[in-house]
Image (cartoon, rainbow, N blue to C red; front, side, top):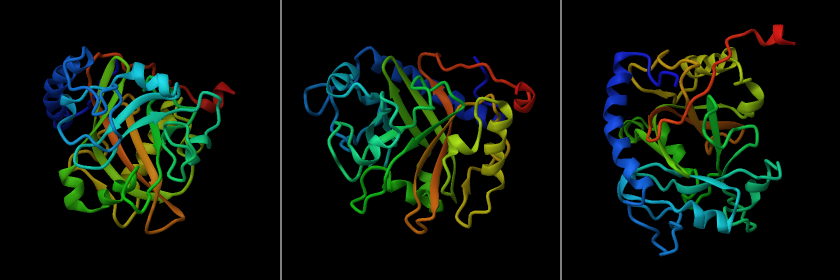
Length: 264
Protein backbone atom coordinates (compact mmCIF):
# COMPACT_ATOMS: atom_id res chain seq x y z
CA UNK A 1 0.00 0.00 0.00
CA UNK A 2 1.20 3.50 -0.77
CA UNK A 3 2.35 5.60 2.18
CA UNK A 4 -0.49 7.57 3.78
CA UNK A 5 1.71 10.36 5.15
CA UNK A 6 4.89 12.15 4.18
CA UNK A 7 6.22 14.19 7.12
CA UNK A 8 6.55 13.86 10.89
CA UNK A 9 3.62 16.17 11.62
CA UNK A 10 1.24 14.06 9.57
CA UNK A 11 2.79 10.84 10.92
CA UNK A 12 1.77 11.86 14.46
CA UNK A 13 -1.81 12.33 13.34
CA UNK A 14 -1.78 8.98 11.55
CA UNK A 15 -0.47 7.25 14.69
CA UNK A 16 -3.35 8.67 16.72
CA UNK A 17 -5.85 7.64 14.06
CA UNK A 18 -4.43 4.11 13.91
CA UNK A 19 -5.73 3.61 17.45
CA UNK A 20 -9.10 4.94 16.38
CA UNK A 21 -9.29 2.69 13.34
CA UNK A 22 -8.67 -0.38 15.51
CA UNK A 23 -11.78 0.57 17.45
CA UNK A 24 -13.64 1.20 14.21
CA UNK A 25 -12.67 -2.27 12.99
CA UNK A 26 -14.74 -3.68 15.84
CA UNK A 27 -17.69 -1.73 14.48
CA UNK A 28 -17.37 -3.55 11.18
CA UNK A 29 -17.94 -6.87 12.96
CA UNK A 30 -21.14 -5.56 14.51
CA UNK A 31 -19.90 -4.31 17.87
CA UNK A 32 -21.27 -0.79 17.38
CA UNK A 33 -24.82 0.43 17.91
CA UNK A 34 -27.44 -0.41 15.33
CA UNK A 35 -29.92 1.78 13.54
CA UNK A 36 -32.04 4.32 15.32
CA UNK A 37 -34.88 2.86 13.24
CA UNK A 38 -34.15 -0.72 14.37
CA UNK A 39 -33.80 -1.66 10.71
CA UNK A 40 -30.04 -1.25 10.27
CA UNK A 41 -30.59 2.08 8.52
CA UNK A 42 -29.50 5.13 10.55
CA UNK A 43 -31.68 8.21 10.31
CA UNK A 44 -29.70 10.77 8.25
CA UNK A 45 -28.45 13.57 10.48
CA UNK A 46 -29.31 11.71 13.72
CA UNK A 47 -25.88 10.53 14.84
CA UNK A 48 -24.71 12.48 17.90
CA UNK A 49 -22.09 10.21 19.42
CA UNK A 50 -18.60 9.31 18.25
CA UNK A 51 -18.29 7.56 14.90
CA UNK A 52 -16.77 4.47 16.48
CA UNK A 53 -20.02 3.94 18.39
CA UNK A 54 -22.04 3.63 15.18
CA UNK A 55 -22.86 0.75 12.88
CA UNK A 56 -24.21 0.93 9.35
CA UNK A 57 -26.01 -2.10 7.91
CA UNK A 58 -25.23 -1.93 4.20
CA UNK A 59 -27.34 -4.97 3.51
CA UNK A 60 -30.44 -3.07 4.63
CA UNK A 61 -29.35 0.08 2.81
CA UNK A 62 -28.88 -1.74 -0.49
CA UNK A 63 -32.31 -3.32 -0.16
CA UNK A 64 -33.68 0.21 -0.21
CA UNK A 65 -31.32 1.56 -2.89
CA UNK A 66 -28.56 -0.39 -4.61
CA UNK A 67 -26.86 2.90 -5.50
CA UNK A 68 -25.81 3.46 -1.86
CA UNK A 69 -22.18 2.42 -1.42
CA UNK A 70 -20.98 4.43 1.59
CA UNK A 71 -22.04 6.52 4.58
CA UNK A 72 -20.37 9.84 5.42
CA UNK A 73 -20.25 11.30 8.92
CA UNK A 74 -18.50 14.51 10.01
CA UNK A 75 -18.52 14.81 13.82
CA UNK A 76 -19.95 18.04 15.18
CA UNK A 77 -21.88 18.81 11.99
CA UNK A 78 -25.21 17.78 10.46
CA UNK A 79 -23.36 15.77 7.80
CA UNK A 80 -24.46 12.19 8.43
CA UNK A 81 -25.79 10.65 5.21
CA UNK A 82 -25.67 7.77 2.75
CA UNK A 83 -23.46 8.30 -0.30
CA UNK A 84 -24.79 7.25 -3.71
CA UNK A 85 -23.52 6.67 -7.22
CA UNK A 86 -26.07 6.18 -9.99
CA UNK A 87 -25.56 2.73 -11.49
CA UNK A 88 -27.11 3.84 -14.77
CA UNK A 89 -24.39 6.45 -15.29
CA UNK A 90 -26.59 9.52 -14.75
CA UNK A 91 -24.47 11.95 -12.71
CA UNK A 92 -27.38 14.40 -12.50
CA UNK A 93 -29.87 11.97 -10.94
CA UNK A 94 -28.97 12.67 -7.30
CA UNK A 95 -29.13 16.40 -7.82
CA UNK A 96 -32.91 16.06 -7.78
CA UNK A 97 -33.47 12.75 -5.95
CA UNK A 98 -32.70 11.75 -2.37
CA UNK A 99 -30.91 8.59 -1.24
CA UNK A 100 -34.22 6.69 -1.31
CA UNK A 101 -34.61 7.61 -5.04
CA UNK A 102 -37.51 9.95 -4.29
CA UNK A 103 -37.76 13.32 -6.02
CA UNK A 104 -36.28 15.89 -3.66
CA UNK A 105 -34.93 19.39 -4.47
CA UNK A 106 -32.19 18.88 -1.87
CA UNK A 107 -30.92 15.82 -3.71
CA UNK A 108 -28.49 13.40 -2.07
CA UNK A 109 -24.79 13.14 -1.30
CA UNK A 110 -23.25 11.47 -4.35
CA UNK A 111 -20.15 10.80 -6.41
CA UNK A 112 -19.83 10.95 -10.17
CA UNK A 113 -19.52 7.71 -12.10
CA UNK A 114 -15.90 8.57 -12.92
CA UNK A 115 -15.00 7.88 -9.28
CA UNK A 116 -14.43 4.37 -7.92
CA UNK A 117 -16.85 3.30 -5.18
CA UNK A 118 -14.07 1.41 -3.34
CA UNK A 119 -12.47 4.79 -2.51
CA UNK A 120 -9.17 3.82 -4.16
CA UNK A 121 -9.02 6.87 -6.44
CA UNK A 122 -6.58 9.63 -5.62
CA UNK A 123 -9.42 12.13 -5.21
CA UNK A 124 -12.92 10.96 -4.31
CA UNK A 125 -15.22 13.92 -5.00
CA UNK A 126 -18.50 13.99 -3.04
CA UNK A 127 -21.22 16.44 -4.11
CA UNK A 128 -24.06 17.82 -2.02
CA UNK A 129 -26.42 20.78 -1.93
CA UNK A 130 -26.53 23.53 0.73
CA UNK A 131 -30.21 24.03 1.65
CA UNK A 132 -31.22 26.92 3.89
CA UNK A 133 -32.45 24.46 6.52
CA UNK A 134 -28.83 23.46 7.25
CA UNK A 135 -29.07 19.88 5.99
CA UNK A 136 -26.97 18.00 3.44
CA UNK A 137 -23.64 19.82 2.85
CA UNK A 138 -24.77 23.22 4.21
CA UNK A 139 -22.32 22.94 7.12
CA UNK A 140 -19.39 23.01 4.70
CA UNK A 141 -19.89 26.77 4.53
CA UNK A 142 -18.80 26.99 8.18
CA UNK A 143 -15.36 25.53 7.43
CA UNK A 144 -14.28 28.93 6.08
CA UNK A 145 -14.47 30.22 9.67
CA UNK A 146 -11.12 29.61 11.38
CA UNK A 147 -12.54 28.63 14.77
CA UNK A 148 -14.95 26.17 13.19
CA UNK A 149 -12.23 24.82 10.91
CA UNK A 150 -9.88 24.31 13.85
CA UNK A 151 -12.55 22.44 15.84
CA UNK A 152 -13.68 20.07 13.07
CA UNK A 153 -10.80 17.88 11.96
CA UNK A 154 -12.16 14.53 10.79
CA UNK A 155 -14.35 12.98 8.13
CA UNK A 156 -15.52 9.38 8.63
CA UNK A 157 -16.46 7.31 5.59
CA UNK A 158 -18.04 3.89 6.11
CA UNK A 159 -17.92 1.27 3.37
CA UNK A 160 -19.34 -2.25 3.36
CA UNK A 161 -16.53 -3.98 5.25
CA UNK A 162 -14.29 -0.99 5.91
CA UNK A 163 -14.14 2.35 7.72
CA UNK A 164 -11.95 5.26 6.65
CA UNK A 165 -10.79 8.39 8.46
CA UNK A 166 -9.81 11.55 6.61
CA UNK A 167 -8.09 14.51 8.27
CA UNK A 168 -9.55 17.81 7.06
CA UNK A 169 -6.57 19.90 6.04
CA UNK A 170 -7.96 22.53 3.65
CA UNK A 171 -11.11 24.48 2.81
CA UNK A 172 -11.52 27.20 0.23
CA UNK A 173 -13.75 28.68 -2.48
CA UNK A 174 -12.82 27.97 -6.10
CA UNK A 175 -14.20 28.40 -9.62
CA UNK A 176 -17.30 26.27 -10.12
CA UNK A 177 -15.77 23.67 -12.44
CA UNK A 178 -16.03 19.87 -12.32
CA UNK A 179 -12.86 18.65 -10.62
CA UNK A 180 -12.99 15.28 -12.37
CA UNK A 181 -13.11 17.08 -15.71
CA UNK A 182 -10.58 19.79 -14.86
CA UNK A 183 -7.88 17.38 -13.64
CA UNK A 184 -6.87 13.94 -14.89
CA UNK A 185 -6.40 12.14 -11.58
CA UNK A 186 -5.35 8.93 -13.30
CA UNK A 187 -1.88 10.48 -13.67
CA UNK A 188 0.39 11.80 -10.93
CA UNK A 189 0.69 15.06 -12.84
CA UNK A 190 -3.05 15.66 -12.62
CA UNK A 191 -3.04 14.84 -8.91
CA UNK A 192 -0.18 17.25 -8.30
CA UNK A 193 -1.91 19.99 -10.29
CA UNK A 194 -4.90 19.91 -7.92
CA UNK A 195 -2.62 19.81 -4.88
CA UNK A 196 -0.87 22.88 -6.26
CA UNK A 197 -4.26 24.60 -6.57
CA UNK A 198 -4.96 23.85 -2.91
CA UNK A 199 -1.58 25.19 -1.78
CA UNK A 200 -1.66 28.25 -4.04
CA UNK A 201 -5.36 29.15 -3.96
CA UNK A 202 -5.90 32.88 -3.38
CA UNK A 203 -9.36 32.53 -1.86
CA UNK A 204 -9.81 35.21 0.81
CA UNK A 205 -11.22 32.68 3.28
CA UNK A 206 -8.84 29.83 2.48
CA UNK A 207 -8.07 27.57 5.43
CA UNK A 208 -5.14 25.14 5.57
CA UNK A 209 -3.73 23.29 8.57
CA UNK A 210 -0.36 24.41 9.83
CA UNK A 211 2.31 22.00 8.61
CA UNK A 212 0.22 20.68 5.72
CA UNK A 213 1.37 23.08 3.01
CA UNK A 214 2.97 20.86 0.38
CA UNK A 215 2.72 17.81 2.66
CA UNK A 216 0.27 15.80 0.54
CA UNK A 217 1.55 14.03 -2.59
CA UNK A 218 0.00 12.08 -5.49
CA UNK A 219 0.70 8.92 -3.46
CA UNK A 220 -1.81 9.97 -0.83
CA UNK A 221 -5.58 9.52 -0.99
CA UNK A 222 -7.84 12.53 -0.54
CA UNK A 223 -11.56 13.22 -0.35
CA UNK A 224 -13.12 16.46 -1.56
CA UNK A 225 -16.53 17.52 -0.28
CA UNK A 226 -18.01 20.11 -2.58
CA UNK A 227 -21.08 22.34 -2.65
CA UNK A 228 -22.19 25.66 -4.13
CA UNK A 229 -20.66 28.64 -2.29
CA UNK A 230 -23.59 30.30 -0.50
CA UNK A 231 -21.84 33.70 -0.63
CA UNK A 232 -21.00 33.54 -4.34
CA UNK A 233 -23.19 31.26 -6.51
CA UNK A 234 -20.58 31.37 -9.26
CA UNK A 235 -18.11 29.65 -6.93
CA UNK A 236 -17.76 26.19 -5.46
CA UNK A 237 -16.80 25.52 -1.85
CA UNK A 238 -14.49 22.57 -1.25
CA UNK A 239 -13.40 20.89 1.97
CA UNK A 240 -10.45 18.53 1.46
CA UNK A 241 -9.36 15.67 3.69
CA UNK A 242 -6.35 13.35 3.53
CA UNK A 243 -6.74 9.65 4.33
CA UNK A 244 -5.09 8.87 7.67
CA UNK A 245 -7.05 5.81 8.78
CA UNK A 246 -7.99 2.64 6.88
CA UNK A 247 -9.45 0.02 9.23
CA UNK A 248 -9.01 -2.93 6.87
CA UNK A 249 -5.93 -1.72 4.99
CA UNK A 250 -7.53 -2.17 1.58
CA UNK A 251 -7.08 1.32 0.11
CA UNK A 252 -4.36 1.07 -2.52
CA UNK A 253 -3.54 1.95 -6.09
CA UNK A 254 -0.64 2.21 -8.54
CA UNK A 255 0.46 5.80 -9.13
CA UNK A 256 1.15 6.54 -12.79
CA UNK A 257 4.08 8.97 -13.10
CA UNK A 258 4.23 8.77 -16.90
CA UNK A 259 3.55 11.76 -19.16
CA UNK A 260 -0.10 11.63 -20.29
CA UNK A 261 0.79 13.39 -23.56
CA UNK A 262 3.34 10.71 -24.40
CA UNK A 263 0.74 7.99 -23.76
CA UNK A 264 -1.31 9.48 -26.60
